[in-house]
Image 1 (spheres, one colour):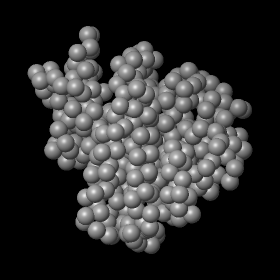
Image 2: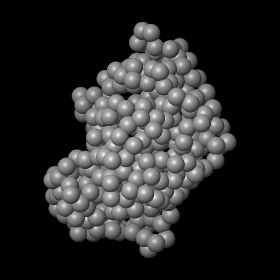
Image 3: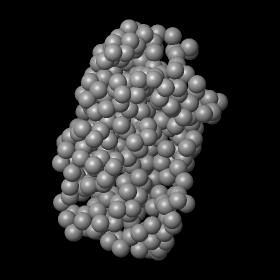
Length: 377
């Protein structure tokens, strides 16, 4: 399994579970591979997302939230705990269960539109992008008619090579979210931003930062994974047919497609000198958690390159692990389950409308994803 971080080539210690690599920015880093090691390092308090000297820290890329250090080195742990305490209630299992009928309603409407326009269709444009966009807009209280504005900024923020574009997108998106918070202060409604505004001792700047991250992650990740998951099912038509015959398998199917995807490695920084296996890692070094390799570890997953929606093995790490588990994972799961379930039910004969070799990925964006997914039925 090739590591999914583009341009990284192991140069030492291939068999040790952690090897020295060079990132696309030309910086040196340590790549951790294998299921057990990645799980262990997720919860290692000696690793963090911040850096003592962020301006000189090694980087994975130029993207704002994933390319380099984020947060305050001295207060990272407290800030992370505060962030989770503020946001977790808004993504609780109870709230997500209440949201599911709305996700089903939005999905059905989008698929109605796609069916009316007829075959073939671009599934990215018809479903993968608008579904999570509509849902996160409703959750945050963002007017959907403003989606084209912040969608453009989100793509700039996620650019992996152009620092100027990243800074432009970050500035514009942060300004937009600050304005959104001001609007919610004046005219609150039943949405996440309004409820955060009602919490004592939370500044407008803090709310705007949380809103910016949620806007970015809340639709970008799901949009990518819906497209990637549908492509994997269409490339394995026996699995598509199995899901059509057994719709109760949809939850497991979503997990398998998340496990099998080409996940990007996650950056961490050594907060002090540490030893991993027989490798000494100096304080400040960049450590990459190899999610793709962990999710394809042959010692954990039987025939890991095969798509098997009935798989009953260990949990994947696409949403992180332990204290770093993604708050938005329950929402993403609902969106994926509903999207896959309705697609297979309503379009049992769906297939790719082009040769898979003609499909292209968004190489310039950290999250990747298909540019288009032409399908027919």
